[in-house]
Image 1: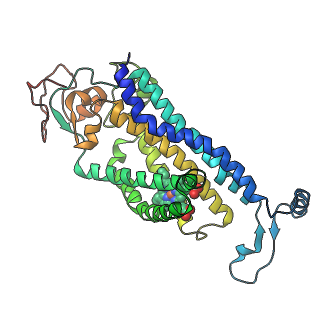
Image 2: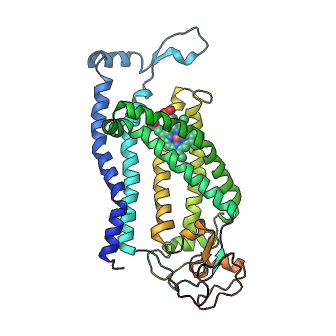
Image 3: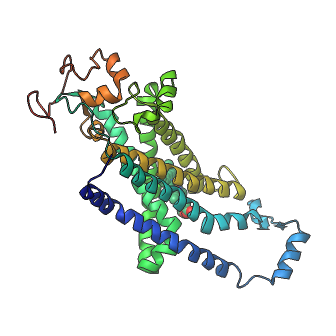
Length: 353
Ligand code: HEM
């Protein structure tokens, strides 16, 4: 679909800050790696001695302690070096590539496809899609997720990005506050995930129609073609399961970091941290796609979580299977029949936007 220069300009203006940050972070990451090399080596033995030490002891330096905390007997744990490399270098690069790749993909998709419009225009009548409790669960999860993501990323990119920008003192204050926010907001986040699981699981069970939806690319690439879907289509189901299972994996790994060594030893803590970092990259990328479709990507979609009501023709085009279960006509040529609405932003007779 050809795009107006004004639309492209607006899009670029909106995404520019995100892109600038991604470019900045990409530029900063190699410097961080160089910094890592410097920090690790100054007081280490010479390279030759180091190699001999590790060969001799098969990579581990194990001593003996008489205190109850037996793990303190391990003086050098070789996996720690790999983990540190991941923490200070690969984790940052992977996060940038996954999140930045998704952002670029979305920009490309928008330029190619434009906003997905309601093909038949607005019906001017709405149907209730989400009850207040559904929206409460959604916004509780979403708002705590955003703070968790920002405060978490602050820890990953604090050293190479924020300290050079704000200085050590300001960063210490921000990181301390961020750390409290990260710890405490984990609880509403988990509550929101569990609420969504209970409220929506019955509509997110995979079914045969999902395969047709996937084969037809959800109708996203083809203007006007809408494979039939129930209350949630296959794409939404994938997002649901990624958020629920990914969110619970973040919670488990996160609480393992918050309460160290209760469930596992040093190596387990390292694995929990790696899971937490990779989970962040995947969840952030999925959420970028979700926010895109819910806002600038699709006409009429935001209303569902905004006020709980969706336009009848939007529902007919994207969730005909759901309307059938409500006993409502799925033909966009039919008038707004048999629809119970709580409020009517576009009364019949009023021209659709
Ligand atoms: C129940 C949910 C969660 C819990 C309990 C939790 C807990 C934690 C803890 C304890 C840390 C270590 C902080 C420190 O260094 O002292 C951490 C780090 C982090 N968290 Fe979470 N978190 C949760 C959810 C999330 C979510 C949803 C995201 C992102 C979308 C996220 C992203 C991060 C990141 C990026 C780090 C920094 C890792 C690093 O320093 O390399 N967390 N989290």
